[in-house]
Amino acid sequence: MNRRIWSLAVITFKEGIRDRTLYGIGLFALMIMGLSLVVTGFFLRELHKVTVDINISAITFGGLLIIFSLSVNLMSKDLDKRTIYSVLSKPFSRAQYLIGKFIGLVLLSLTALCMLTLVSTLTIWAVKSQYPVYFKEFVWLSVFQAVFAEFLMFMVLNAVVIFFSTVTTSSFLTLLFTISTYIVGQTVEEVVQFIQSQAQEIQLTTAVKTVIEMTQYIVPNLSVYDLKIRAAHGLSIPFSYLLSITGYSLIYSAVLILLASIIFSRRELT
Amino acid sequence: MTVNRLLPVSLIAALLLYGAAWQHLQHERHVFLQENYMDYTLPSRFTGPAAMEFKGIVSDFLFLKVITFLGERIGKQEEFNDQHFQYLEESVNTITDLDPYFWDAYLFADMIFTWDLKEYEAANKLLLKARQYRTNDYRVPYYLGFNYFFFLKDNINGSKYLMEASKLPASPYYLASLAARLSVYALEHRIGIIFLKEMIMDTENEQIKSEFILRIKALEIMDQLEKKVREYKKTYRKLPSSLAELVTAGLIDKIPNDPYGGQFIMMENGRVYTTSKMLRKK
View 1: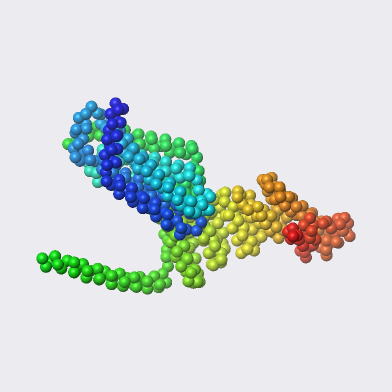
View 2: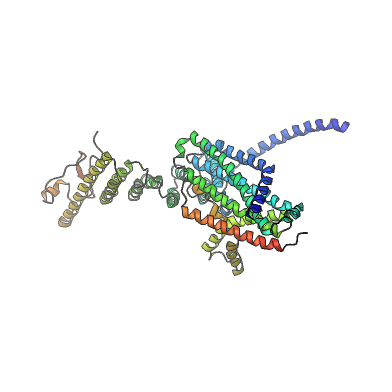
C-alpha cells in the first residue's frame, strides 16, 4: 500500500519538475537574490539584515509562486483532463490517491526550497565576504531555521491546495481559495491582537467578533512560520518553538488531508 | 503591400513620439517633485498587516526611501523643518514597528532628531523603544546616555544609561569609568562606587581592574569627605569655607591624598571634587 502512495508521489513530483513554470519562478528568485548583491551597498551598517531579508523573502516568494501555480495545476489537471479515471481504475483508494499527491507536492516544494536556499547561501556568502565588518551579528543557523519554518508553511499550504481542489470543481477557484487562506492566515494573528488591544475604542458587534474569533481556530496561523526578522538579526529560535510549529503543521495538514479524503471519496466524478 | 511598408514607418514615428512624451513627462515630473514635495509613509496599523510575512524586506525598502529622501535634502544643505520632523517620525515609527530590531533606522533617526532637528524627547522616546527589543546592545543605552548628558544636560540620567551600557556585552571598557566620572558631576558618588564594584567582578583584564580600583578609591574618599562636610554643616549650621576647616574642626586628621595625584577641593555648594578630574597624569 505504501509503495503505491510512494509511486504516485514520485509521478506527481516528476510531473512538477518537468513543468516549465518552475524555471521561470527559479529565474525570478535568482534575480531578486542577485539584486541583494547590489542593493545591500545602499544601506548604512546592518547589511547582514538587508541581505538576509532579501534572500529569505525571495525564497518564500518563489515557494509561494510554486504552490499557487504548480501545485494548483497538478491537482486539477487529473480532474480537468479526466486522467483521474485511469488513475482511480488502479487498485487505489481515493484517500491513498490524495496522500500520494500531497507527498508529491511537498517533495516538489522541498526540492525547490533546497535549490533556492543553496543559491541564496552563495549570495549571502558573497555579500558577507564583501563586507565582513558588517556581518558580526550574522548567524547561519538562524537563517536555516527560518527557511525550515517556511518549508513547514509550504507543507500546510499544499494541504490547503489538496483540500480545496476536492471541494471545488475549477482550478481557478482552488487558486482563489488558497490565496485567500494564505492572506487570512498571515494576518489573522495581527487582527485578533489589534481587536483585543483596542477593544474599548472600536465598537464591533458580537457577531463580527465571534467570526474573527472562530477564524483564528479554523484558518492556519501562518504568522508562526515567519522567523525572517529574527533570522535577519541573528537571533536564535528556541528548539521547543521549532518543535511546536512542526507539530502544528503536521497535525493541521493531516486534518485537512483527512477531511479532503472524506469529501473526495463521496464526490461523484463526472 | 502598402500596409506592410507603412508598419515600420509608423513604428519609427511612434518611437519618436514616445521619446518626446517621455522627455515632457520627465520635465513635468521634475517640476511636480520640486514644488514642496513631501514624501509620506503609511502608518504601521496598515503597513503591518499589508506586508504580511514580508515585513523585513518592506522595512528595508521604506528605510531606503527615507534615507534617500532626507539624504538628498542634506546634500542640498536644506534646513529641516516641522514637516521633515513629522515625516521622519512617522516613517521611523512604521519601520521599527515592522522590524523592531532595525538599529540602522533607530540610529539614523536619532542622529537627525538630535543634531539637525533638536527634537531630543522624540530621539529618546525612539531609543527607549529600541531598548525594549535590543536588550543586549550596549549602543542603545549608550546613545540614550549621550543624549541626556550632551544635549539635555541631565547628568543623572546620562550616567544612569551609560552605566547600563557598560554592563552589556561588547561595550568598550572606558564606558564604565566615563559613567563613573559623570556621576561625580551628577551628585551621586555612591552610584559610581557600587557600579564600578559590579564591573570589577565581570572584568578579567587586570589592567582595567586596577583602573577601576583606583577610581573607586578616589570616589570613596570624596564620598567620605562629603559626609564630613554635611556633619560640619549640622553642627555649625553653615558650610566650611574649605576642606582644611574640616581638619581644624577635628572632623578629619588631614585632607587625604588623591590617588590620581590631584587635590581634593570643595565647591561652594558643599560638593567635593578633585583637580585631577580622576584622570591619570601622563
